Length: 400
Image 1 (cartoon, helix red, strand yellow):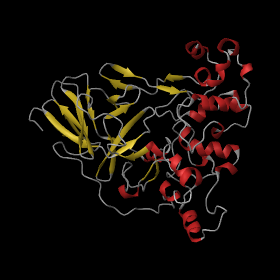
Image 2 (cartoon, rainbow, N blue to C red):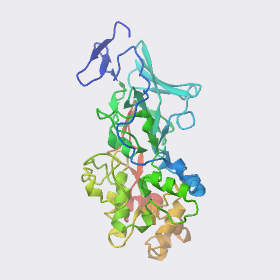
Image 3 (cartoon, helix red, strand yellow):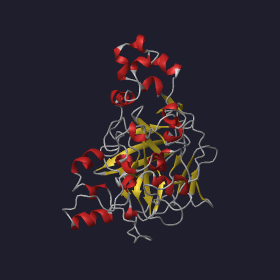
Image 4 (cartoon, one colour):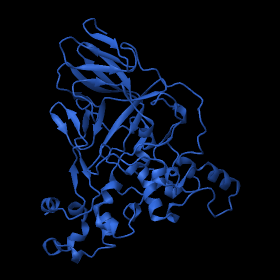
C-alpha cells in the first residue's frame, strides 16, 4: 500500500484505507496489501438434514431435471465461472468508472478464474469471484471467500444496461469488499449450507448451490436411498408432493423467499413442505410496495381480487419446473382460464390481440424506490414486475 494512503483497522472487524482530504475509501475484511485467504477444508458442525442437491434427482427424473436446471430457482446461485458470470470481460467492456477519477474497477479473466481489480489512487488490489448470486433476470451479484467467511463484492452486473454497476446500497466512489453475507441471504439463494459463527461464516464444502427440488419437496436423501434399493416401487416414499398440500400450505411454501424479506425466528433451512410460515419467520417488515430483492410477490398478490375472491395460488400462473420467463402470451393464457377477454374494458380498442398480453396493463413493470444502485451518473432503478393484479390506467396508457 503506498505511503500516502492511510490504512487503519476498525473495531467492526475490517480494515479501512483512505487518503487525507479525500471522501472515498476502501473497506476490506483482510489486511491491505494481502489477498483473501482461500476457503479451508472444514468438517461440518451440524448434520446436513438430508439435503443432497438437484443432481441426485436426475437419474429417475431426467426430463424434469433437464427443464428445472434452466429455471431462475436453480440458477439463483452457482460457482463463479466464465460460463455463469454474465458481464463482459472483454477490453473496453470490462471496466466500471466512478464519480472519482481516482477510483475505478476492472474485471479480469485468467484462464477459468475471474477477478475484480480496484484501482485506488496509485494502489491496485484484486478479489476473486467465487460465487454468483442472482439468475441475471435483473442482475447478478458476486461473493468471495475469505477463509470461511463470505463477503459481497463491490461490482454487480445489471441486465437492464448489460453493464457493470455498484452493488445495491454501495456508495459510488468507494471500494467495499467487507459486506458480510448472512444466513438468511443464503437461505433464499442456496439449497443448504452448514452454518458456523460469526454470522457470515459457513462450511465451504457443504454448500449446495441453487434452490433445488428439495426446497419444495423436502430433503431427498431418504427418498433417493429407498428407491435405489427398491427400484420397482412406484409410489414415492419419504418425499413431499406440493400438489397434495392445502392452499395455505402451498402459499407458505413459496413464502419462504417470496413474502417480503421476513426474518428468521430460529435456524435456517428448517422449513418443510406443509409447515406454517409463521412458525419459522417473523412477519415481513416491507410495506408491500417493493423490496430490494423483489421478494414481495406473495405480499403484493394478496392485495388483489384475483387472490382474495378465489383459491388462487402461485402455481396457477407459474410452473416451477419450466423456464417461462418473459413469455407474456403464456401467462396471459393462464389469466384467460378465469377471465373472458370480452370482459376487459379495452377489448374493443385493442381487438383480438388483447388475449396475447394481459400482463402489461394489469401487472406492470415499474421501478421501485426500494431497489436502486448508485452510479457515477446517479441512481439506477431497475423495473420490477408487480404482482398486485389490478386495473392500472398508467400502464394501460403506456401499452396502448
